[in-house]
Length: 167
Image 1 (cartoon, rainbow, N blue to C red):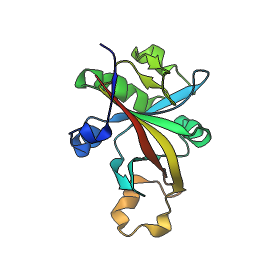
Image 2: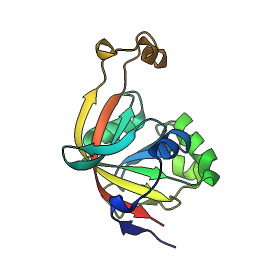
Image 3: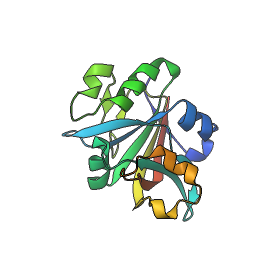
Image 4: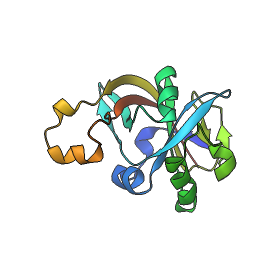
């Protein structure tokens, strides 16, 4: 069974469950080169009168390079049976391994950014805004426990959700 495009307003789910507990893959690139990484930080909402997703990527991640140069990225959500694949994609670098070969995930290239055939839900996002997080702006010092002393913070990407696909 293939994907069908739906209006994002038709979706009913908890972003806290989908992102924070089930995880997602952030993917950017094209047929020639792309990378994906697992994320459990991010959110969905409305900003600038647009339905948006926001994600956070460390500059050291290989996916960061693709998000920087591409106009679109995808957020891809899977059923629990793909937990091992998501764990792999979150702990191994695409610089060193072919994540699709190692996990069995099948890339799909019929949108503005790659996603995966095995997904339950895909959000295609057009970048609207990117900004580095700054330790100077941290209000609650507990946030800093997520970073080493000399480690840079994440870059936040805000993307307009331009397409949504479900099964």
